[in-house]
Length: 118
Image (cartoon, rainbow, N blue to C red; front, side, top):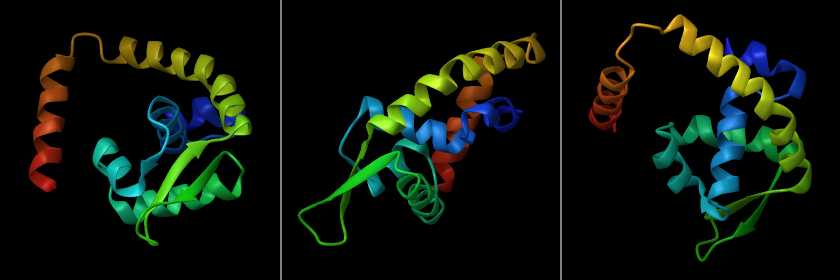
């Protein structure tokens, strides 16, 4: 649903989420981002590679040669600006579908599952 809605922006929901996190927290490492997004680091690394090759993020070396710090480029910021209205529309659509669902309980349950899986 989200990937389809974001298609005109050229972003998938995972890419959009990563770019939004990096805009809020520039300089995050891959590990810190994986924790923040509750993503498997292998999946995150694969997605970061795609975003990097698209020119939407850049990396800088960390203290350890294996560590990378990520930041959104101007092109990435523009991509997010294009995607935000699309994301807001699909959020409204999702809220309509989820009407009557206890979203707080669902969020707590998902959070507990993520913690147990980590």
